Length: 116
View (cartoon, rainbow, N blue to C red):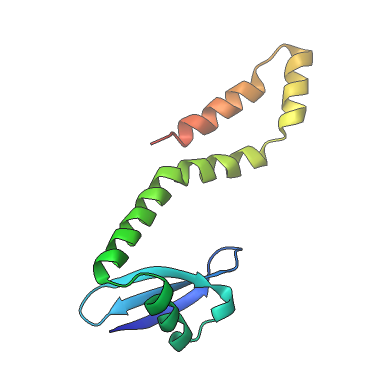
């Protein structure tokens, strides 16, 4: 019914991200437990028994995941940028010097990565 095209660990989680292709259509991504490893037989058995049963369910899941990723990407990008700031020192210096360096930096990050 379908074939595993590729597998990889899903970020730093205990999940495997597998690209699955139905014989008649484009590939879809499914997430399975890392304990299954990358053995296609185990992954396909897991998909058949516990995950998404039909192509339509796979499509709906893929679209929902895509929408979630788009909706929350700004948050991840902001977090990465915030971590690069020495925020405690910036706030202290602002308090001592009467400046707004920290607020300006935060506003610049929010402008660069706006909420959708």
